[in-house]
Image (tube, helix red, strand yellow):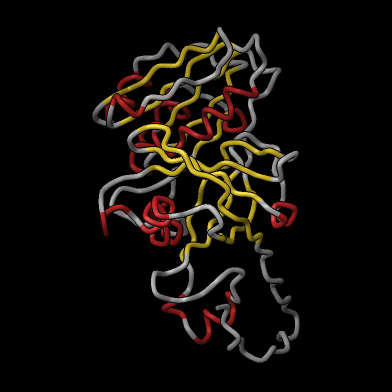
Length: 285
């Protein structure tokens, strides 16, 4: 059930502004489909779809609120009340790219990477793997800031399994005459997917050690960067190294590159997000 132990409202201090609660959209699981051994697609929809801030960017993302096992809570959640009175049962926030919006059906698709088994699989992956049609899920968003620009003369997209949905969505909305390269790292060859993309965009899969992705980017001829638009989102440590190659060495203008870490090795998302405000979480020099 939703917690009803919300604290009494307080009057903001003089000169301060109370932060309005972030709206939650509650959607139902409509279906799920295994796309590859380690990628699961959830289709979510219902009346709550209208409560989402529809984002037109191809890297649009939502924050899923995943209930803690055994909490008995049902969405929507009184986040302020839980934070004050029952913090151990606060739903976990997990960020996922919207793979596809379907306004006509009032539904969206989210692709979830499955990794490990049991406790090693991760909270969101376990929830998604066990989800059944009719299950309800609260989310907030959508955010995002990257879309392929038609005026760009070439495109370079760099990502891993976590960024695959954003890359796939971006390839689908590119101008048919677009040219460039998509470099996608996967741990396992069998997780490759057929991707719709312009004929002039090469899709190159990098299988095995993630450091190979850095080697592939370093080997690219980036002597001419005028008109190039870049999307680069991978693990945090690797993202820092790639930024050095792309921004410092190649001189790609900051406004022509979308670059940030989607995750960090050895961190759950709560730690990863908190560290963004610390030196260890900084991508820019």
